[in-house]
Structures are given as C-alpha cells and as structure tokens.
Amino acid sequence: MKKSARMRDIKEDIMAQSTEKVTGYLPDETPSIGKLLVFAFQQILVMFPATVTVALLTGFHVSTTIFASGLATICFLLITRGKIPLYYGSSFSYIAAILSITGVEKFQLGVASDALISQAQFGIIMSGLVSIAAGIIVTRFGMDVIEKVLPATVTGSIAMVIGITLAGTAVKYAAGYSDATNSFNTIAWIPAIVTLLATIIFSVYLKGVWGQLPILFGILLGYLVAIPLGLVDFSGIWTGASNIVTAPHFTLPTPNWFAVAAIMPIAIATIPESTAHLFQLDIYVNDLARKKGKKEYKIANKLGINLIGDGIGDIVASLFGGPAGTNYGENLSTMAITKNFSVKVLGAAAVMAMGMSFLAPISNAIRSVPSSVINGACIFLFGVIGAQGIAIMINKKVDMFDARNLAVISSILVIGIGGSYAFANGMIPFFGQNLPAIATAAVVGIFLNLILSIGRKKPEAEKTAA
Image 1 (tube, helix red, strand yellow):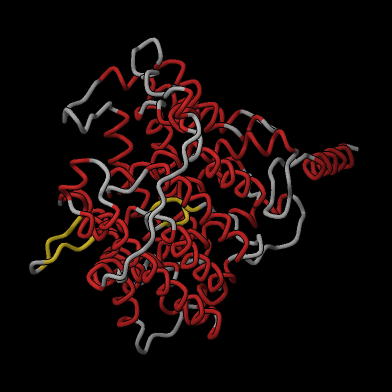
Image 2: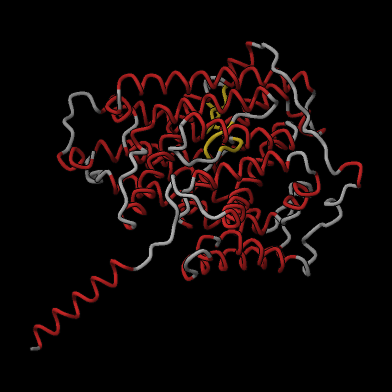
C-alpha cells in the first residue's frame, strides 16, 4: 500500500509539473497589444542610454542616432524574416575609428560638422559590406566554416569579455560619476542599489506578465527614489510648444577613403560579437521552447543571414546619419531574463524609437532617468551577458582541461579585459597604433584557434554537442 501511494504521489507531481504554465513568448508568438507596448518600452529603456552615449562620444546627432537604431532594427527583422529577435543600437566598437574622422575637438564642442559626419557615414557603409560578405560565405559554405573559425571557445570568451569590460562602466556611473566635473556623487548609490536589488528581486519572484517586466519596474522604482534626492533634472523635458515635434538632422554620406581605411576593418572584429549573441539567443530561445513543448528554433544555423542583416542594418542606419550598429547584449539579456523573445515586441520597440526621435519631450523624459539608475540595472544586465558566454561553452561541452582551449580562452580574456582596463578608452598602444581591446582579443583568439587547430582532432564531447 505504501509503495502504491508513493507511486501515486510521484505521478501527481509529474502531472502537476507538466501542466504548470510556462510564462514567456517565443519569436513567432505575439502578446496582446497592451502587453506588447509595455514590453517594447522596456526594451527601449534598456537600449537608450548606450545608444545616446555613442552619439555624444562621436559627435553624431542624438535624435538621428535613435531614429537610425529603430530603422536598422526593422530592416534586420525584415531581412531575417522575423526569425532572429535582436535589437540594433549604436556600437561602442567603432567609437575610436569614428572619432579619427569627426575629431576629438568636435566632440568637445558638441556635434560634429555635417561634412565630417558624412565622411564617417561612408566608412560605416563600407564596413557593412564586410559583414554582408562574411554572411554570404557562411551561407554558401555552411556552419562548418564558422565552427572552425569561431568555435565556442572564441564566441563564449568574447561574450564574457563584453560583459566584464562593461562592468566598469556600470559601477562607475552607478556611483554617480560625472564626466563634466570628473567627480563622484555618492548619494547616487542609493537609487542605484535600489534599482539593482529591485530588478533582481522582481526577476526572481514576480510571475506571469509581471515577471516579464523586472527591468522596467526596477528602473521606475529607482527613478522614484532618485527624485527626492535631487538627482532628476526635469528642466530639460519640456522644450516649448514650438519644439515638441522636431525632425532628426539627416545627412548624406560623402566618399572618403581615409574613413574607409579607419572604419571598415572594425567590422571584421565585430563578427565574433554578433556570432556570440546569436548563439546565446539560440540557447535561451530553445530552453523556453522545450519548457513549452514547442518545436526547436534553429537560430544558430541562421548565422549567415544574421551577418547579412548586420551589414545591411549598418548601411541603412548610416545612410541617414547614424553611427555603426550592433545587436545589443543589453536587450538580449532583457529577453533572457524576462523570457520574452517575441519579434513583434522588438519591431514595436523599433517603431516607437523612431517616433521618439521626432518627439523631443518623450526622448528628453527618458534621458532624464539618472545615469545611476540605469547603471544600477546594468550591473545585473552586463553580468548576464558574461554569464551567457559561460552558457555557450557549457552548451557546446568545451573541454576546459584541453591545453588548446585554455590557450584560446585565456588569451581572449586577458587581452580583452586587461586591455579595456589598463589603457585609456580601451585602446591598446601597439607600435604607433591604438587597437580596440575587445576587437584585438577577438582577432588574436581567432588566429590562435586556427593555428592550434592544425592537425588536431575534435574531441568526442565537442562532436556530440555540435
């Protein structure tokens, strides 16, 4: 009797688990209109600070940059036929190269001249052709080529480097650092910590629809805490009736071969970053699909069209005066945390971003969110990016006792992380040149992997995982 009762209890537990509702949206699923708009706004909040920062650092127009991010995202979603849910924002990898065209002096004065922005646009457009060419190669010759050039040891390590190198920025600005005064405002720690803890608690304990909005709720709570502390500047939100609707400042590209030489090569180094994000997306989407009892989404097999979409996104964004873009790890982390991978949500976010670029009060209101609040949430988000790199290697069953794997992983981690923190702006001085730390780490990792793969047989565990 005891045995049969125990078996009955086990069956009931299994049935309860199987009938438990799994919350989340797969790429081809669509939330109701109300949920869709709220989820989309959460994605905008996550991408907004970094995208605006790139515009400010490079001398590009902020409203144009926001418009370009939305347009590039829509083009990417259309090109990939809604199979790859990723949001495109401005890339930090290109900042140094673009500044070599727009000039540091121009940044200090504010927005660069149309003539300089136009020259940089041409270099960005040509860099898009590199991504397109890489995508065509992958599409033509298959995943075997990319697995040889960009195995999990490279893509996983790059993902970890991206997350960890961003960590310094998150903590620095969570502490209330001001670029204008080169000082910290320690009172800023209060809303930053509130935002961080609230976001974590909401992501762990909220269920259902509420559980898909932890970043939005965390930022809103941090914002409310920041108001009585005097950290929110409301003065710049309302710009007057005549300036409510203002078109972004569009510029056209001007051929400039120096800009091509400076900017185009950066695209080669950003391919591992885009690949890592795609593999991360594949892992998390299919985890949700398994829990919901749905079909497998072969997202990792779409690397070729993903890279083509990357390139076309850069070209389209820069045609109107936007900087080079990339699929954002912050948005990917938000999707992973909230289990919301709906392509329609990202499409709605892109349309909303484009609309905001014409509405000054809305974009100004988002910009009024204190940096300490946004970066309080980013402490969590950037950590998730790094953790996703570990997930890639676990998923591919990388042998961490293999000397070759250790050589590739360790080199990428130290060059990428060490170079980012040891030198100004993450630029490694090298025989008269300044090399971007993350891009250099990616190139070194790819080179080491190819050299050390000569005559090597793939371990059985990695064959099985592949």
